[in-house]
Amino acid sequence: MKVTLKDKTFALYLREEEILGNIAEIGKRISADYAGRTPLLLGVLNGSFLFAADLIREVKCDCQITFVKLASYIGTGSSGEVRELVGLAEDIRGRDIIVVEDIVDTGLTLEKVMDTLQKHSPASVKVATLLYKPEAYKGKHKIDYVAMEIPNAFIVGYGLDYDGLGRNLRDIYQIVS
Ligand code: IMP
Image 1 (cartoon, rainbow, N blue to C red):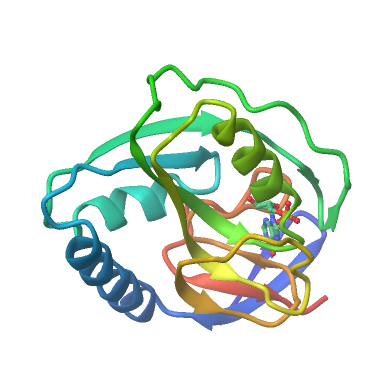
Image 2 (cartoon, rainbow, N blue to C red; image 1 turned 60 degrees about the vertical axis):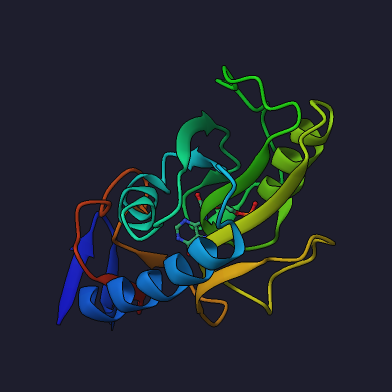
């Protein structure tokens, strides 16, 4: 199955059932790892909104959620330019934070998020991502919870976009041309 968004064509890559199954797995791991604690999930908008919504419903211990925003991407190539983290309203001092990312590509976005969070003295920070591109990753932080590893190709769907389009697709699609 193929979809066209603006000038690009994408082919079906990961079905919704597989995505949700993998999210349930990391939800189980988080529930076990944080039993007896109350982690604060910190979703990085915009791309993580669907993942965060599905992940939090798989977390069975007490937990809270908040969202921040920070964008580093324009079109199909990483711009290398990382903007400021905005919207950190919660007091995260002494809290157990789980950063919730849609995709970790080069890791520049995550780097910025982690640097900002560390300044607020959280008790711990772990990272959960829906997708991880190990071939592109240049960061130093461990990615603790990965729903799916993917090759270094541009994808859309399930919250991820191409120029703002495709976030509403239930499955994930990979670029073909
Ligand atoms: P990084 O800073 O290079 O790790 O890129 C992370 C951000 O770039 C993600 O939060 C996405 O918003 C965006 N991004 C990276 N790869 C893709 C992709 O394949 N499709 C859609 N967005 C992507």
